[in-house]
Image (cartoon, rainbow, N blue to C red):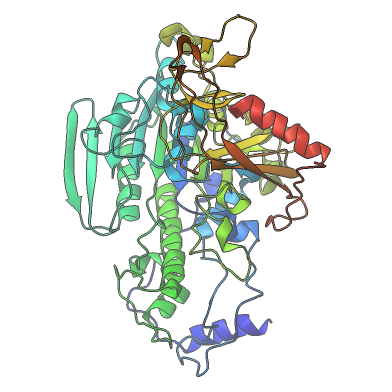
Length: 560
């Protein structure tokens, strides 16, 4: 037995039993029963700020670099002082991965709102305009076709689906937009409009087509989200098909101690023990230093896993047999939470490095064949692909949708349903693209740089001369970063300086002055052999052929 594991077990055996024994959630056996025929329900679970480095099923943070035991050691829980554990206990997610498919190359954007917009619309950020976090006046426009609208309008003569959204929304500025989810296809919404400033003191918006209400809450937000989703699902007829979007706020900051009864005995012992660095801690307590942030984050992730198990375990049995479960994260792990002994802390959330944009995805349920359960799929998949994949799983038709709403705006997603049917199937996409920018409006990607959608180009006479743009160049203030990968190599392009629009020539108003182009910095990584992206292979003078091809693909898609 490893010495460190022995110390942990010894601590558990000697520690007093906590006063709040936790539930022992376990996913019900029917999640792993024989595959069933459709039509199917979709339960889409969104984790917040959880990278692959934080889930044991990905095995990327083994704890081998943990520091020595505390000296003197606390009598109740002798573990290393700096990082006492590599992973939170996540039995629910582990069970889903064990009877589902674990995707190891699922790419998103590096911040919450921009990824959620991509998932809901199947379109990249430069098309929706949601490049970062939703601002005080920005939102994903109602003209976009959200997943529930696809499920409502993609069937003839009528849709078999009811659609509910629960938990964090974060796709619109909150004031005056409480109906945003319902306006975009959901029949029911219950949750906070954005991030909660306190996981135990927050406002829950409830919205239907009949109106909205806002009520203060004192319950742990993950518990309330799970309970709301469960009540809605179990309130449906067993024959009613549904799409449930369940988005947990925790473990996003603020980092607080969750209810102890959602935690394992090991974690309860650790939190209620007096440590050389602090404690005991109480429910709702907010972290006051870096160590507490990491400890409380881990506890909140464990609590969310418990609530995922509670939701699935208590679903109506007939509904559960027909439910496809998709678990995803919105972006990678926050930098303060990354274990610096294992991964570069500057590469987390808000960056387009691997830890920021390559995140967990698990698909489980009746569409996963028995022989494929517990398998991994290394093929590239993107957040924009969920829209068409859910359409394929449910049988919704794009042609029927377009007959109702007209031709879709340019779409970026591809279905990965074939990879769920057989994880060894051929790739569905050759490249995965991620992006963030800090001006929330759509832009036109051009060889001259990004320009705000709606700015008309003007031609410099004669007509065969280069195109010049007399309109406002998008200003990103250094906040524009993109990445594109083929799964082996990855190109990152960061904005260094903004360009400037030339505008009209004051001496000749019928012509445009030349623009000042933006400047960018490229980085290239062999992510197959350098997953932490420590060795930059970029060369200005003699670039590798893979850099040239990735750069061409990046520019063809998203502009210079």
